[in-house]
Length: 129
Image (cartoon, rainbow, N blue to C red; front, side):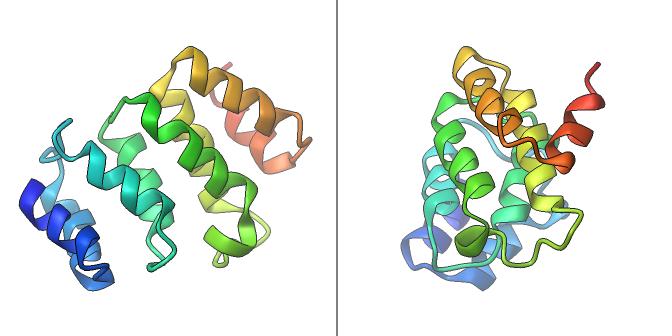
């Protein structure tokens, strides 16, 4: 998986990235892939940010290097969440991914999101009470 993901990111090929994020590859991401996941998170050459964040959440990919890029996705709708409607699904997935990471750094990022007083952030956080 690492080589496919590395190739997708280095060539900025959205189709290849999408193939890597397909659920058929569930469980195949390990910390060797984290460098390329991070690069894809901050990249603006694709529209797969929601799927990347969801992969972090669903696959329990825990690493503080994801926190700032996830926070950036959450805070910059125009750049990273153009498909989010009023339910802000990608924003909610950012909350879940940050909760999954569950470190001091991710908890600080969650506080920044909580301070937005956004109903979708509040709704996602209520699931953890």
